[in-house]
Image (cartoon, rainbow, N blue to C red; front, side, top):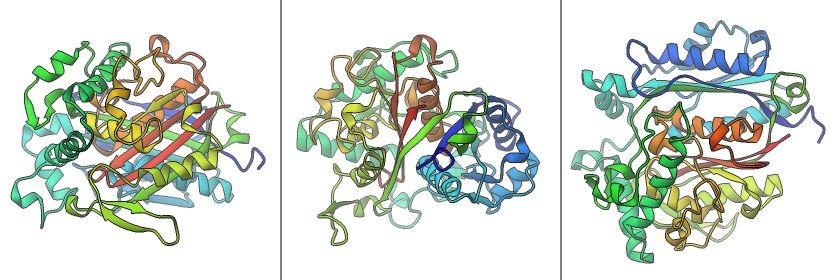
Length: 402
C-alpha cells in the first residue's frame, strides 16, 4: 500500500478541561477543531469529512450538521454523528481510514466536546444523561442501578474468580494520577497513594471514589488524511497501523463472551471476559504487531476495573493476572507498560463521549515526542482503546511514529 492509501493523523487539538464556566458544547467543538486544524497546518477547505459524537447536554439528531455550520465546513462527502458513546472515536477513526483509503475524502475531522461538569449544578447534567438513554430505561435503571454500580459488578466478579484485590485496582488510579501530576492540562494533579484510594469514600463496592473517572468539561479533535498529504503538513504524522471493533449485548444481564471462531461463533454470558479480544485481534493483525511491541498504552479508564480488564483482553497478560500485573509501578513511566500518560479519565478529564478521544490525542503526542516530563522514551508504537455501554462495546487503535 502506498502512502496515498495509508491513513494518518495529521493534527490534534484539545480545549482546556475541568470546570469551564460560561461555555457550551458547540463552542468547545469549534475551539478543539480550530486547534487541530492549526496543529496540522491544513486549510479548512480541504476537510471534506466530519464525524461528531453528539453531546449529552446539547444533542440533536443532526448534530454533525450543526457543528459543520458553526465551523463553516460547507461541502462534505462524509458527515455523521457517531452513536456508540465512549467507543466512538477509534470507531470513527476506522470510518475515516476507510474514506481516505477509498479516495472518498481528502481529510476527515473528528471532533467532540461537552460541558458535563459545569452543567451539573443546574440540575441538567444527570437528567440529560438519563434522557440520553445511555443505559436501559426499561429493565435496569428503574431498579436503582447506576453506572458505577454496573462496573462494580464486573469488579466483584473478577475478585471472586481471580482473587483480584482493591489494592490491585488502586494501583491503576495511582499510576494515572502520577502521570497527571506531570501534565499541566490535567484536572486533578495532586499525587495519590494506594492508601488514599482505599480511604476515599465507597461509591459502589468495591469501587471507591478514586476508582471512578472524573466528570469534566472539555473538547478534543483529530484530523485524518493520507500519509502522503500528512507528510507535507506541519507535524510528524502518526500512522494508523491497525483498527478493530467489537460489540456485545447492551444490557448487563446479557453481556456475552464470544466462544469459538467466526463464522461459527456462539456466545455465553460472562462478566469477566469481554469481546475486546476480537477487536484486538483485528487491530494487532492489521498492524502486524503483538502486545509485546507496544511502547505506551492509552486504555479507556472510566473505572479502574475497565482498564484492568483490558490489560487481559488486549493480551498484555493472561486472564486473571491483571491484578498482580498492575502492581509495583509496572504501569507507570519507566515501567514495563506505561498507561494513560496524560492522566486518563481517572485524573486528566472525562468530558462525556469525547473522553475517549483524549486517549488517541495523547497517543499521537507521545509518538511525536512532545509530552515533556511525561514522555515515554523512544515511543514508536502506541495502542489507544475506547469502551462504552458497560464494557460491551470496544474499539482498538494502534498508531505508529512515522
